[in-house]
Image (cartoon, rainbow, N blue to C red; front, side):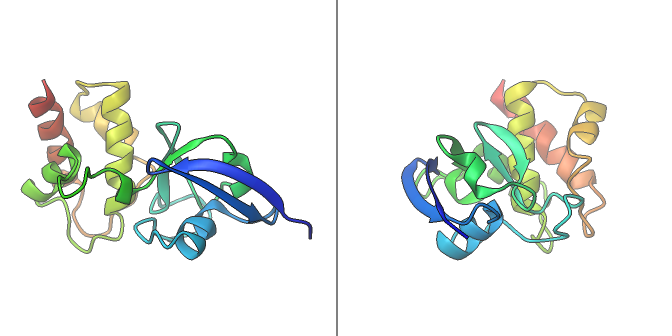
Length: 156
C-alpha cells in the first residue's frame, strides 16, 4: 500500500510523516511520535480514552485516519502544560481528586478543556452531557464534574 505524506502541528511542533492511508491517528501518536498519554481503550469510539484535540475540537484518535490530519493542529495531554507549569484543568483534576487509575484522565481533561473553550460557564448538567463520551470506571464522575466546575470558576 502506497504511503501518503502528511504535515501537521502536534503540541506546537510541526511534524511531517509518511503514513499508509489506513493508519489510525492513535497509532501515529503513540507508536511513531512516542506520546503515550493518548490511551487505546475500546478501539470502537465508545470510551473516550483516546481523545485528542484537533483544531481545538475533541476527536477520538482510534477512529481517525492519520491522513485526515494533514494541515491541522493536534493537542495531546502532553501539549497542555507550558514547560513545568500544568494547565489549569490539570491542576483542577489534581486538587479535586478527579484522578484515580488515570487511564481516562488524558481524554477527560482534553474534553473538559474543549468544553470550557466552547462554554466558559457550564452548568453541572451541561458538563455531564459534554463528557458523556468519556468513560471512567474509578471515580463515579463526582470529582471530575467538581474539577471542571472549579476550573471554570477560577478562570472567571
